[in-house]
Length: 248
Image (cartoon, rainbow, N blue to C red; front, side, top):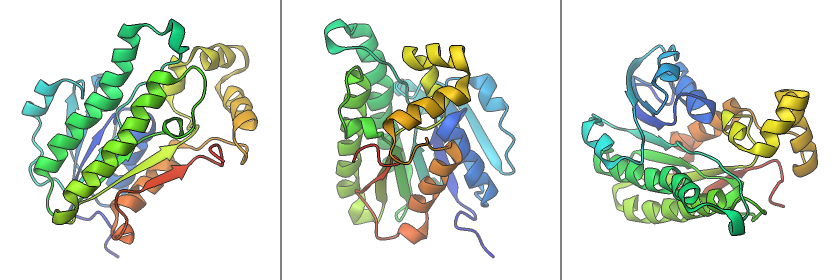
């Protein structure tokens, strides 16, 4: 049976690890013809073994010049995933760190969306990876939460602008996902060193998530694939909250 992504060309940013890597592997497994993968970590990108044509681009999505050298010809799908985390109270938050987080998570998302909307075929689909932190405020995540809240709104604006071309643009807002982005959070890094990563994830999930666990990257990848597929043909400008009940 023909898979949903047979013959499709897809862009995935932040593709070297976590959700981006899981999305790339899912699309390749489900018959995508060509993947354009972007990440700052060239070595990690090279470790991806995918059964389809693959363009690997090492670079920073917030660098406008990067997009001048990426061939998006024939683009059908895009996943705006590249992001970084950080944690600090507003009163002690360094401005350079604020700009670092907003630069990747919002400026980079804008540049990715702009390039994708310029290149994508009519009838294409785009998914942005937001966060439950952009919906539910918590202490210490001002920059990250603000960047993801802005990304949700940017996604909705893009959906309205692209609707005339039948291009769908949606967001997913996970809460906890077991990805390397947590290693940049001092509280998690300290706990993982003390008890191990699996136990640290389990402790966090039991405290914060009604369903009692965090998502695997592969689970979020399946949800991304749904929103990219024809099964979601009438869904645009929506935010799929995949948080195990965290925002309740």
